[in-house]
Amino acid sequence: MGSLSIWHWLIVLGIVMLLFGRGRISGLLGDIGQGIGSLKRHLKD
Image: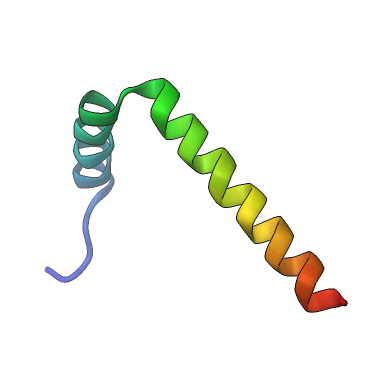
């Protein structure tokens, strides 16, 4: 009951794609990736 099946995740992903659109999600993921990379560089210094 606590975990979600693959079908639940696919439905949630589909709803998110409909709400935000494909370009906005890819831009957001790119920004998150850049932020993580920047954080790793700063922690390394």
